[in-house]
Length: 145
Image (cartoon, rainbow, N blue to C red; front, side, top):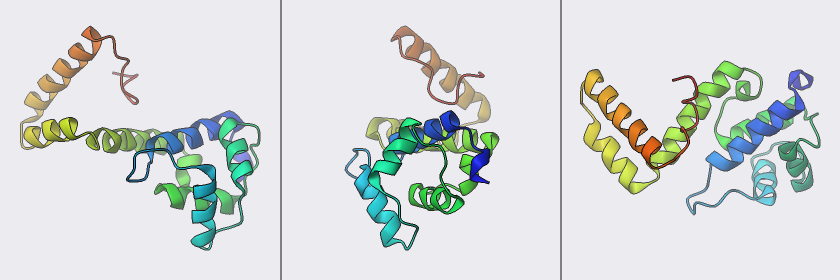
């Protein structure tokens, strides 16, 4: 089952999880922290070096148990590693959660709650235009819009 994942796709997905899912302090989890947490949760033994190799695409042969443990640690379903459509949906949710950690963004989101779909679309268009004016790239998950 784990052999069905292309190495580059696995590395990209794992890198995204490390970048998007962070502890309360805000910095990325270290490979040691992830390995220790998986062990503490009763998961399979996995070394920090092996995690680094998976993230960099140097290794691409994790066991099903390793993928399940990584998914559990990062709070995503194991299907994240196998189903591109589900991975895309989860990536969008992670991007939203990441943005909501930013207090000003959270305030805007809270103020927009309850607005009509038409109003939310207008706000979204305005944000896209301002991002363009400031030279910012499209946020993850917006490539098809």
